[in-house]
Amino acid sequence: MEQDKTSAENLIKIDRYLISEDYGFVLPHPQTELPSYFDPWMEIASNLSQLIENCQLHSKVEKMPLLSTHALTDYKEQRLAHLALGFITMGYVWQEGSDKAQKVLPETLAVPFCKLSEILDLPPVLVYADCVLANWKKKDPFGPLSIENLDVIFSFPGGETSKGFFLVSLLVEMAAAPGIRAIPKIISAVLHEDVASLENALQDVTSSISKMQDAFKLIHGYVNPEIFFNTLRIYLSGWKDNPLMAGGLLYEGVWKTPREFSGGSAGQSSTLHCFDVLLGIYPNLECGSTAAYLQSLRDYMPASHRAFIQAIALGPSLRHFVLAAGNDSLQEAFNSCVSALVALRDYHIQVVTRYISIPAGKQKHRGCLFHNAVVTFPEKGTGGTSFMCFLKTIRDLTKKAQLLDV
Ligand SMILES: C[C@@H](C(=O)Nc1ccc(Cl)cc1)[C@H]1[C@@H]2C[C@H](n3cnc4cc(F)c(F)cc43)C[C@@H]21
Image 1 (cartoon, rainbow, N blue to C red):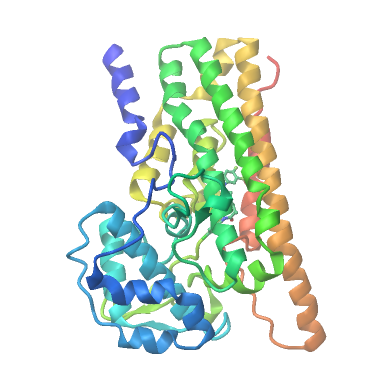
Image 2: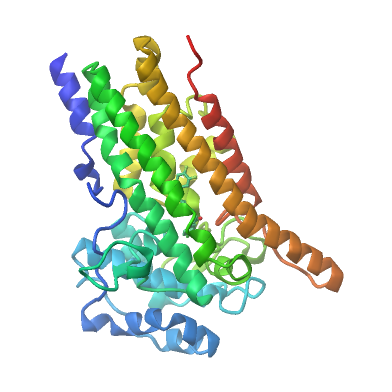
């Protein structure tokens, strides 16, 4: 009935989910400053690399006053504070390297970080939504959204590679915006059985996905594989299933026992999930490790973005409608969308191979040559072996989503 369609359409309007017409899941024009009361946090977060290199980070954090989060009422302020405390936390835990992790987070950091995480419904660890979606500014406010005119708000040791990794990810996310904007149009076209509008909207998604791949190619010019693997990747690591931090990190003054949280990962990108759900790529993933792994990644996204993905999953099936319509050009539009996504996933696998698998292979080789205890725990974060398996699984599932000629 008509009102069912309208309610289904209302369910998928992107502005309900803090998703921007122009920026998709990216936080538009993030706040870059907090009230001066929070200077102790901002001074440390803004000088993290230097403090780590001069071995001053620990003492700076130990001297940090216990600040109240009450003054942080605005959403963009809360995102900036979670970002700043996330960077300080990763720096504090990993500054001595992945084999000497800090096991206790001081309460001056743990208490406000956990309070903000509760307010934002994010975990108390640095997530993709922090370091990519909320960690950017234009150098020239009137300039273009190009990598030359963009900068990060905070970065880790690894200099240009650290900045480049976050900014390339940001540009991929920005390229996804037209595709995300087309999703409500697709759902509405299916509900109204409007084949022409559906075909146009599918073409918008296809061209957006190929523009994501174009942006992704920038990584080779801005991110050095060795620096990424040996320096930056360590700071993005988490404390879940990590043999060096059994039970996880102790959040002093918050919980009496340590808590486990995963490190930052591309799998936490809402964009990476929403096109698959739209195309019906995970129909029978109700059980098994991939489904559980997918769901665990969604717990690390902003709640409103997680809800948007869920709303797509609960909406009408695009796949079934295209199959039932029996319209060749509509089927072609659907299949080119799937092909573009397969190409993007293949490209992502190539990137993870160059930036993780190959440097890891070299490290193991070096390790056995020098007989030192090379510690590379199977982190599920930025491209650990299990993330590579995850990528290959969803790439193969995406391939199977092609509609065969009926
Ligand atoms: C540069 C890389 C990275 O791993 N970034 C990263 C990782 C961890 C952290 Cl903490 C911060 C940044 C990857 C970019 C492209 C992004 N992407 C978004 N939607 C996608 C849909 C797809 F099909 C797809 F293949 C990749 C997709 C994911 C990240």
